Amino acid sequence: MKTKLETHTPETPPPLTDAQRKHLAELAALPDESIDTSDIPELSDEAWSAGGRGRFYRPVKQQITARVDADVLDWLKSQGRGYQGRLNAILRREMLASLERARRA
Image: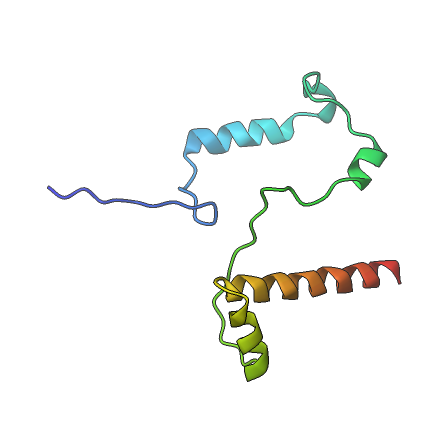
């Protein structure tokens, strides 16, 4: 008899059981005042404004085909191994700078 191997990811979780659905519905029906948050410190607006992307954040990589000038590619490759990562870092730095400029405007 063959066993079927199922693989689940955060994007494709296993389906909820009836018991899990019932429990989630009960939790959703609770008024906020009845939820015990004593073990969770309140965060001030200042703490929220200082928040940022976690240091362990890893964005999802997507494979693309892009055309770059030959001299740009030669320069990237001349820096040693990891030219694609360097290209991504340069693009990310520019993206974040652009977002910051737009936020300030």
